[in-house]
Image (cartoon, rainbow, N blue to C red; front, side):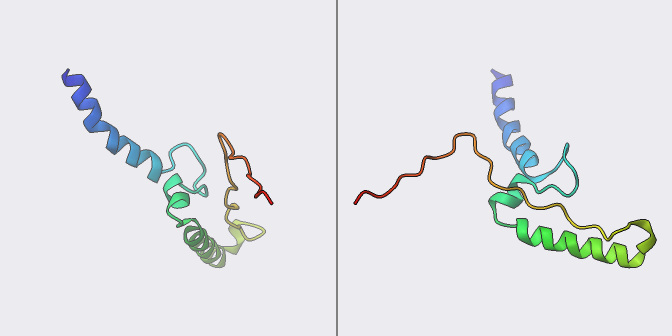
Length: 87
């Protein structure tokens, strides 16, 4: 049963890596951890600042000035049904 014990020890590290990094998505995409912990807006502002600084330093490299990708909207697997209050 060593394989079972080793797998359980490895899983938390794998989960952390999977929620805090972008491995198969564009650089501008937010990580699940950024969305979950409410950091997406501040990360988006920082990306905009970096893009503006890069454009100011090299305006001939991009036209028009680049903008960060918009933040994603809600994504549901099973969207909760809205319960209307009874009168």
